[in-house]
Length: 340
Image (cartoon, rainbow, N blue to C red; front, side):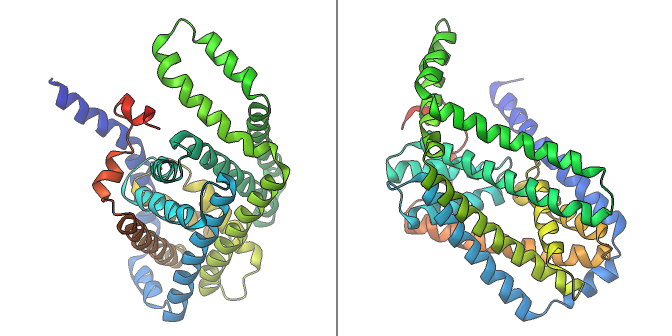
């Protein structure tokens, strides 16, 4: 087998787990839904509902841009952070493994002068906040859904794990020099690791410094929470189309389950996993699976379209091509890592 064939199979191997998960989710959905009910539910969606969720999708990106800009700090403007988020989501919609998170780090790191790994550290913090909020919401709402208490300890454990990760990041940020010295010491006899990897880890660790500044920490958490408010409003709006009069906590529950579901490896745009997560959440609430899938498709498609439009706008605004952005994401060479 020649070198190009090996690289081709390696790429297939990277895509395969996510495709399998998405495929399994789609297969399960096709088994439980009734096509005539699905079509009828899609046709029942009102134009006003479509416009509302498109508007909320745009607002969520606006607020998310502010949240990321707050985490990144003064060198980055809101406009840069906003288009960085849009381009990242766009890449996530066309490539697997959430590589858009690294793509937006490259984009913002370059135009702001922070560097890729300093920018990427802010994405790690952002996602840690998201997981903490998602775990908290599951902890609050899941006992209401199933009417039992056995799941509560499981949710508490999940939340403790996330908080422990945040505390670990805080410890690393607070003790940067000792941690960096330790890294240099343990990699002393490994030249490649010490020269190519440790310097990037140092930049990543330096980016965690935000966690040691209380005002910036809580302001960032506020904007992340504001994004979640918009997301919850979006999904609650979808829920009441299917189940008029549903309590607000239904929207909170659905939002948190979807957030945890799409964190799994999947095909680009989370195809299948997003829909399966929403159908599973609404099924636990007694909602018809076909109706749930119809509105999951509408919500997901609307969000993807908005991300694509704004992501392409961001590329055009910065006069860069999709090819150049995509080619900068995979870490195929050491140059990609060390240029900043």
